[in-house]
Amino acid sequence: MRVGIAGTGTMGAVHAAAWRTAGAELVCCTSAHPSQSAALAQQYGIIAFGSYQELINHVDIVDICTPTHLHKVMAIQAARAGKHVICEKPVALTLPDAQAMIDACAAGGVRLFVGMVVRFFPQYRAAKELVVQGRIGQLGVLRLKRMAYQPMKSVDNWYTDESRSGGIVLDLMIHDFDYARFVAGDVERIFARGNQGTSGPVRYVQAVIRFRSGALALVEGGWAYPPGLFRTGFDISGTDGLIEWNSDQPLPIQTHFPQARNKAESVGLPVVALSEDPYVFEIRHAYEAISTGSPFEVTAVDALEALRISLAVRGSLVTGKPVSFRSET
Image (cartoon, rainbow, N blue to C red; front, side, top):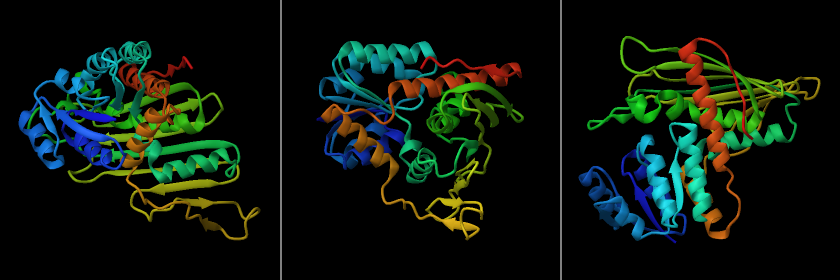
């Protein structure tokens, strides 16, 4: 199948590299910045089109890596042309826009995959599997961290414009909101606090999420580190054990079990190593699912619910009050 990438910034370049391993034919790209698009086209030996419509006319799959506020219009345009859609997160800036994208793809008989890539990181996948297996007993508390520096772009830094990116809550923390729901299930209540700093967008947020299962999650995110630093991590505790990992430690996740069940205080569990780029894993999975008609591991509804959680967090930040959460799933 022929693939075209719309948007040739950082994520467009990451996706282009991933597509080369997926078995698809990457044929073209387009961008609002022609020189950037031309550079990517030269690197991969593809065509740089001057318009999005030209790209649509030449592909079977459209990979949307543009600023978030453009996702809705571009996805609907592709769906109406009968093209499958792969879209970077967040799916959209509002729930009605996200639903419109889902509806357009359904009406056009095409697939919609949203890139919630954290689900494809081996450490996060391994932790989820241990929870599913019941290895840590009844799930209790999840702590998830995603701390980076404020994006720096010499031209049009749309990330810092919340009207286009959704800010750190929608653009950065949505990964961990999606993962928390993936592990703990439906959300019941959300409360959040943030720090805007001296000027500009919100730079740091903590969100507390209560799930219907009784589990709790503390999600920490921010653009508060010095340039070049990006740290992620998690610990997931239950009645029978603890799973933890952070981006500064060796690759395998670590598990800890009570002495009553294990003679050793701490048992390192070398579940996985980072043998494959998660973006490659994600793109390959999406392409195989589209090619074979098999289910996506991340559904469009998952992306919609991650957006719903993110918007509830933003609502709590604005009001200073908890938000009772109602999932549509």
